[in-house]
Amino acid sequence: MIFDSQGLPKDSGASDYMDSARLAGLMACFGHPKAPDMRKYLINGEGVRHPVEFPSNNPNNFTRDQLMCLAAGLKAQGREAEVKVLYDAAVSRFYRAQNSEADVPGSTKQFPNGADFLTPSNMNHLRICAGMSPSWLGKMWLMIDIAANGLFFSKEEPNQLMAMCASAGSFYVKALRLANRKLDKSITDYWSGWRMESDFAQFLIQKFK
Image (cartoon, rainbow, N blue to C red; front, side, top):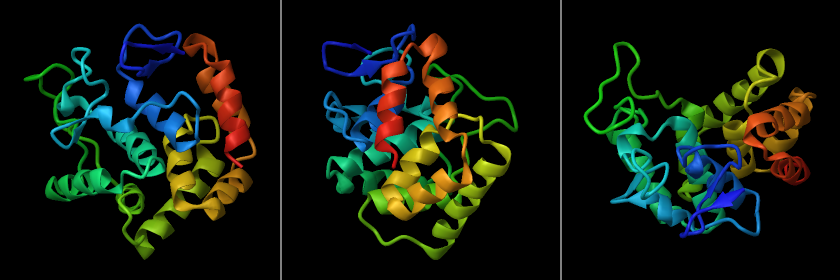
């Protein structure tokens, strides 16, 4: 991992900090000793990929995937109040993420590629991380996500679903482990290769139990 002057990380193979919030959120969620203060990824109550680097500091390119990891990291550090702000903002956007722009400020997305939709399980994740009671629909939707991952997406990136399951509790961690017998391989495949983070892959595998 590479850390900037604020102690914020990026993947060793990455050329920028566009995925810094995702990495830091996972580090905090699973108790990595070098996890930064996740509040550094908040500007005026909105999430950013990185608080300084351009265009990573544009809140309007902050995706659902980044948000799920950020919320999990904030929860792990006892920052439920900050997540409540993120939850309320998502409700006010009619259950959409912040990424209304393609990249730099003022850029536009071509229809129908707008801001990411937040599913009931995504919103439930924000509820849990904000210290609120989970919803029955959110819990059911998370189980559907887990089943779909095992049946159809076992080789896909698992980071956001892992963060959601870890935040929801050990029952969901075990459910994902049971549903996706290739989970360790998908973790390794994602973090090894060009990201050059094999050690972090092993860290996640050991912690996600």
